[in-house]
Amino acid sequence: MRGKQRDLLVDAGLGHFSLRAHVPMLGERPVVCVSSHAHFDHIGSTHEFDLHLAHPAEAEIFADPRPEWTLAAGYANEEMFIAPPEGWDSAAYRVEPCPATGFLEDGDVVDLGDRRFEVIHTPGHSPGGIALFERATGTLIAGDIVYDGDLIDDTFHSDRDAYRASLDRLATLPVRIVHGGHFQSFGPTRLRQLVAAYKG
Ligand SMILES: [Zn+2]
Ligand SMILES: [Zn+2]
Image (cartoon, rainbow, N blue to C red):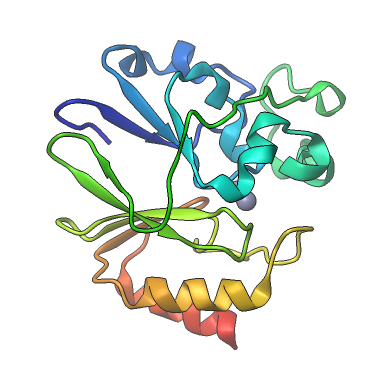
């Protein structure tokens, strides 16, 4: 997201390729990197950014991203790709430490100068999950708490009751578009369907 004073990057991918090297736009202006949570597929290139904001509940994982904590131990393998990128080596894969340089709590605002994103704490998939909501445009950047695919609530630090409560809360927002942590973006009707499907 490009702002007037600074740009916002939510999650920095797997880290197999350098984001900074492959996305030159990221070098043009100050970038605020916000992590939706500390799983490996969201924080692989986060160490490349000077300003890294995240929820304190996962501070320990950002600082010490051991494979059991980032889920790389169970998921960072050939099977997660349709076709693995060139040079991929599951055994050698590591996430670089990327301690948060500042913390975001529920209700905080990430201000880009002309665009304001409200922080919504969304525990359930992981304890420090956060979503960002731009009320002016109805844009929800959800992380892994909701996307149009199989939701994951059985990791070592998942919590199903918290998951349901977080989804209920997201379903009340005046959303126009949801960008989830994976798969295609979708609108408010699909959001409510996904929430209802999760809750059974
Ligand atoms: Zn995740
Ligand atoms: Zn993910």
